[in-house]
View 1 (cartoon, rainbow, N blue to C red):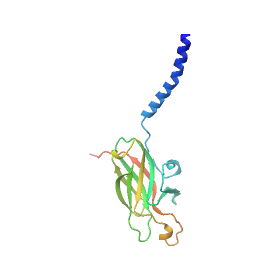
View 2: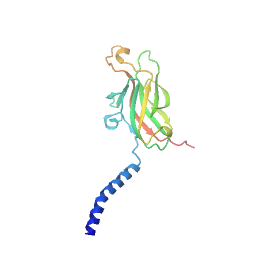
View 3: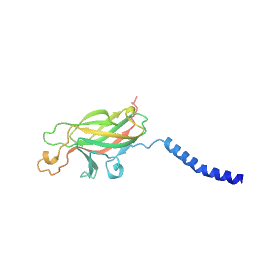
View 4: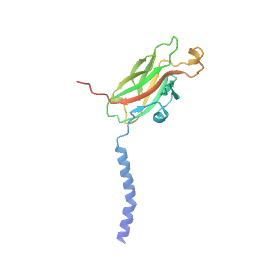
Length: 180
């Protein structure tokens, strides 16, 4: 009788202990880290928050997405184990008489840097210190000085969206040590 009771007791508690062990193992695992977004349906779906239009393609077939309005948000995952370099390729919506477009990057609501965007597609990089990253989900917020409708600013244009800048890709990289 004792053996039956012991077997039932050990079986009843084995499953919860195994489950608890699996939960602990998963909680201690280093989170995957977002390394790049190509602003296409395959790599970016779910990462784009408020402020983005749909996926588009250039004449050469490269995908991109317009930020509409004056703010656009991206969700990424970080291990928060060091400084990171946020690199991206973008270009502003420009029109005759347009002021220079500026982009301010916020990471988790903390301002990092302000850049003036050139008129053509270019690669930009902003160093973000470790202190601004959280382990797990993080939010990048791009804030622009203007967003205008092509219909209101370009003769013959019919696009009514308010555009600020188009993004081709984004990378989150570890800074490279200085060369000696």
